[in-house]
Image (cartoon, rainbow, N blue to C red; front, side, top):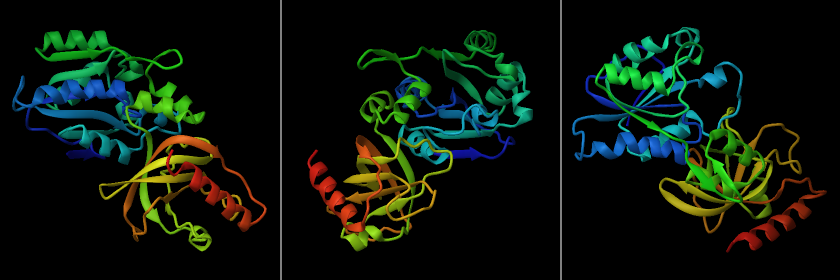
Length: 309
């Protein structure tokens, strides 16, 4: 996948099918949108056209201070887009100049002018251009006048305990309440955290339970601190694990958020490599123990209880 990031000065010298959006979470609604630009591009309908995702960095909501925690970081989105078969990802810089761009100039100069769009896909709640004046209807009108194929995708509804309209806002609420199974239904995959494996304080090793540690990006939304049943992917290998999210109150007074995972039946040295930690189920809240012996006993209990869950 080609990535265009950190610049407004680019030009794609081939026709593209462009999906426009924030894509926070890359949830099932976003995935339906991505299918509009990737499925027809395998020689079936539009040969020679590259699939392209257009998104902003930072997201407008982050730039204007409406949000400070994301479901998917820039690095995580790149992983998911590549796995969905996207050819080109544009992470367009969002600043005051971008915010003041009129809807017409956004479409004329950027989406068709620089990104080469001959097809555009977007959600029905699309908002673009200065003051969010651009919408799905304006996009339809623009496409009709310029002989561009346009696909407007309605929101998906999913039945859980009741019927929900899938949105990043709803998923964010579920993650914040540790409702991991429900969030997974809306995301299409378990909620995951990506990062480089770093050295911790090695207390787990001393207690007989070696772990891997990753530091999440500062803008990553984490669920409530506690212990989670997890799947872990390292170098393409998938493993079962038990993950603690929090600040390790028994062994540390630091305020750094960490993601520490014990991986079942795993003894490789993977420091410096990258891991994806998928959170499947909330087991218990994080807690402070009176001694390391008490912590060790709880770890042994947790690992035994959840091994075959």
